[in-house]
Length: 215
Ligand code: SF4
Image (cartoon, rainbow, N blue to C red; front, side):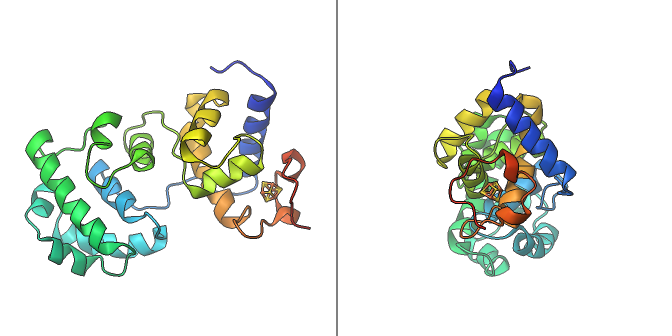
């Protein structure tokens, strides 16, 4: 457990208030295995979860696992995911990722950060999402929403993913990282939006020191 201090008490209050406000902290991406979550998370970069969820059922039906996807061509995968942003790069990464997992890990997705981050197309945020949501390994994933919200709320000195992760994991107990990530993402999408945060209807407005609140 983290020692209690003012910042720890405040982030816990913020998360409790966000949860009490009705946000449902469940993953937006649909998946039934670590492999499916890994693929969906790679596809979700600069793309909505809704769009990814429209594409993945057909993708997983055609190529159920690493063995099948490793045998696909990049062009075939591009055709399947062409409605998703950056589809060419993502198709290339998915096929290379499947081949690597087949070659080195018997086709399984390992629940280890250093291996996940060594896979094509997988960065720290994707690895953190997979570790937290598929393996129950404590990890605090920072995307653009989490970075922005944590900065406005005064928990991080900057929205930079690494800076935000370091700041939040220092004040928040690891048992709350996965839930905290989901709540902060949802709050950033629905209320604390990039251009015009809806501060008037924000459930944590009284705990927020952001000087440029909308009125
Ligand atoms: S008060 Fe405004 S800036 Fe602060 S967390 Fe809420 S929406 Fe974001």
